[in-house]
Image (cartoon, rainbow, N blue to C red; front, side):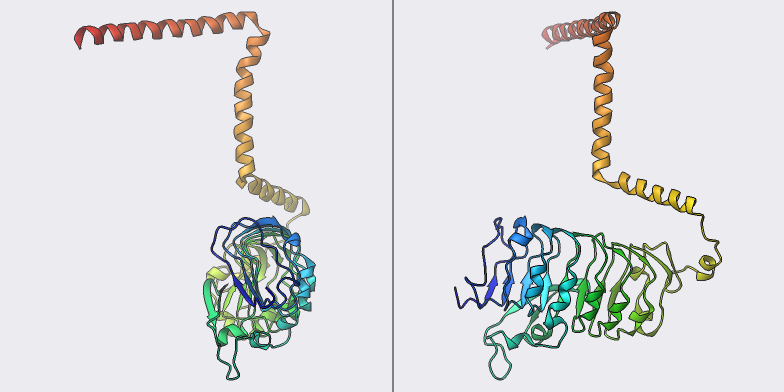
Length: 347
């Protein structure tokens, strides 16, 4: 279908990935397959579509790494790969996507706009930002840019190259296993309105420079391992406790923790740090489902073989065991006979 421009198949029950490539749909600008049951190794099912402006695959069962070939789709405006099973690191080549670096309008390559700037057909997309799902169409759709990689199993550090995406409006990397520091290059995200880095393993301080992001209205670094004083100035005073909770070593307003108490504490010896790290690791392991099921399996095995092995090895134990069993059977039989006699005579 050479003239196919907009393909929305979200919210169905498809299981097998749809085979689409640049030769079969060269004019494709919008692809939404979110909310299905698609599964497979993502790099094998994500072709390079050079004209694509919207790619939404959220809420499926894709796994594997985010392929670097994604960076060849330089006209992407919104990318949503959230709520899958993706792993590995975030590609550092995302700064190759020019529509996130230089101001551009979706209408420049979307042939649905007439000369007056109005949409000939009502095209709309759903994209989560600022903590809610929003529907974009018309003028907001033309200018919306965003990346949502939340609710996966991404690891490694956040690439500093993301700081080059000056025209990005929304960035959601929450609910992953990202580690390291928050890049200071984030101060260059001049148009950013929503930044969610919560539920990761980020450490270190919150860069003071990001207080200069004047359009930022939604911000969360909750449930990480961040430390130090919270940069509480400019419009960052509008963010409440919920933006920072779950970081035991963060201090200062809006949290009710006095930074002087942290600053006056002597540094812990390395041995204690190591012991604390082991306790945290043990607590995390115990929270995993794997620990629970392993515990049940071990207890079952111990109980089963704890009875069977003595029966195999000891003749006296077998005699006693079978004697107890036979006694129980005899008592049960007598009880049943008495009960049946009672029922037969009185009913």
